[in-house]
Length: 311
Image (cartoon, rainbow, N blue to C red; front, side, top):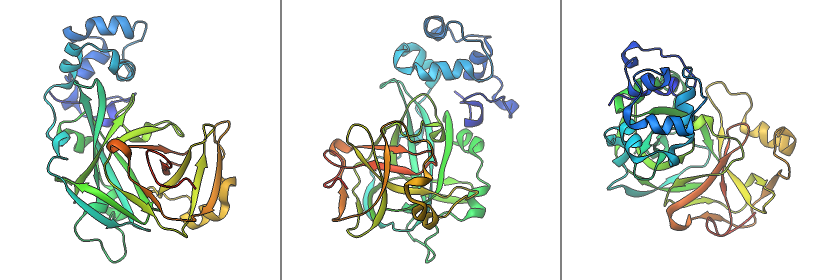
């Protein structure tokens, strides 16, 4: 089954006529309703006006409520990329101040009634350039997420980054390498998504999980940004968002300190700390808990179940 590319997933008009007869688009226009999903739509999306991505958004928010028949009809054959983590090889990468991107290829997993995304990272390429830039701006700028989603037969493709790594080293499971425009880099993890196939649509300061057995370390003596939530959890910055149109450098961000945050939820606070010991993260059960801030910088949870140390 042909899938919608990311641009048409949440609230977008179709830009490529070839997708006009896809199951998702027909369903969202309110015509030719998928027989297996009729009851689900009536039950969970009653009153939602078809069009402009509203039916799609509603159904993605109710995936765990959907019948297996409906999910199977929407998911179609399992994309090959969701198996790219098989036979992965464990590798340590020197990450400090390395510039990278990740691409997420998302689709429905009918067995778990959830959205999952295969993650591919440029930090896992075999040869890191001397300038530590694994994601040259010119190559990243021309990546077309619609074309990538279509190529791999997934519901959505999205770009994370470019980012600057704040952690010192990662140990990752390096899986199958895929081609993305003029770049080729391997599978490194699988992310669990909620309500959207676009990693850029995640809610700031809302934890999410990622299937990742990899170890990550921040060296003793590093000065880092951490967030404290009202439940006593401490979150350590792992990746600083550069983006395709950088607004502030990492050094300037750190110099500004906690005052740079304008949208911290009630009870949250930011701190700049110098690590008194290595912060070694090895997620318990192979499931890591992460979140993004208002700038799309990414943080990992610290302490029991995640790391040996809570800054």
